[in-house]
Length: 360
Image (tube, rainbow, N blue to C red; front, top):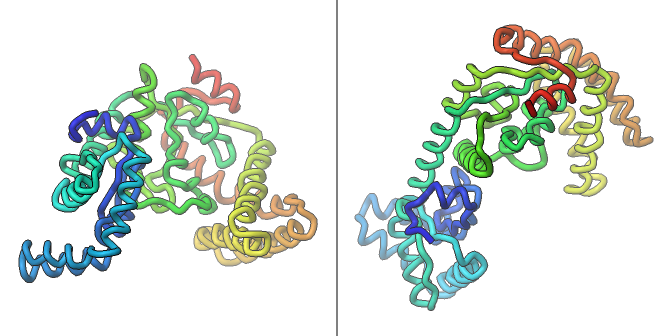
């Protein structure tokens, strides 16, 4: 075990981290292998912070010990002890490797458990993650392009040197791209990306990254600037699959799978409502670009398709609004973007041809 300063090795190994920061700090940014078992909750941390500003560090420390005492202190200690036993090769982690992780470490020691901590805390790990991304994106990369429904994400996932940016972002990029997993904070997304790139790089003699041709934003997350700059210079392989095949992929992904996922998560009735809301939200997100009249026309077709699907289970009705949406909005938009990158296109073909080309 290292001394808590070999951050690259800690991140590459998915080393468990018992993060003792407050929940709000954890939500704002955390490492992929971290679990949040806070020393203080958000309210306690806020009170201690105010005390620190007004009365100084000694008074703040005294207040912290007063707030986390008795049965509550014991309950939290038991949670840390249990986590230490479950993750014997892990580390404690706080914001900067300061008082909070040292206090938890001391309480654990007094209870008979010795457990190491991350020197420099989350801040040091975060800086290491950003440096990892800055370094690794300098390797050559190829982007997979193609219109919506071309199977680009599936192709990236099949590559040993592929990094699924949409999977890491919990979003598929389009206005209908949300998944049932909430998106992470920007910092947590960047941390996930750094660790995924580090692990992918460590698995092989990596010569080249394979990434999907993404815009700057994937839902609410944006790509790190160092990655965007490299992607803007990268060569592109374009998947040109038949329109009918693209429709079938989109039918499976957005209508069959999303309905199933919502039903599984929320139950039959609430799941149906959530699925309906999801499709309506996706369409309304591009209302301004469609124009009000066209938006209203497609909404009528969406409502009819949902009624058919609910009555019979058939998703055929959705093609009545999906086909014009692709023809009038998504395809022209992507082709326009691709035209501006025409000089960077090094290969075009159907999905299988691009997959074969990537092996060469």
